[in-house]
Image 1 (cartoon, helix red, strand yellow):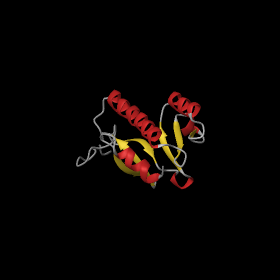
Image 2 (image 1 turned 90 degrees about the vertical axis):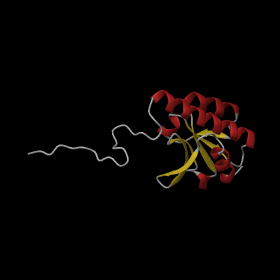
Image 3 (image 1 turned 30 degrees about the vertical axis):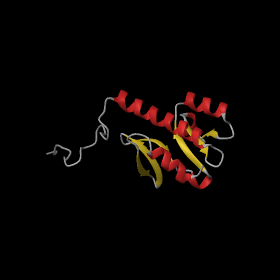
Image 4 (image 1 turned 120 degrees about the horizontal axis):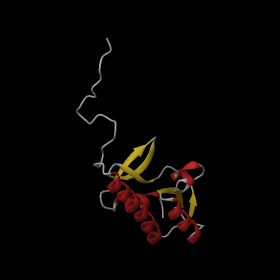
Length: 131
């Protein structure tokens, strides 16, 4: 697999959209990230999983999956080696990350795209003037 395959599969998931965060390509559902190509130059795609899901993927296929270094990895961010992953495994892994994001979006009770504490588009944030 390669970054083009990763993108194609990610965008085939219902409601998935391509975006960008800090100069890196990301994939979102409900305007929230479930996967990225932030480490594309190193040959990786990234999945936003739970630590438990990450542990299962790494245990099953240690030559394909590994935790992202540091705190992101401890929280479930997982590299997938694009050159080593099959299409079926990549699709299943992306679907797992997508489903987790959809479930989190549903539990938060927020409308897709709403940002708590941010002014909505077209509406100015009201502030009081001090005298």
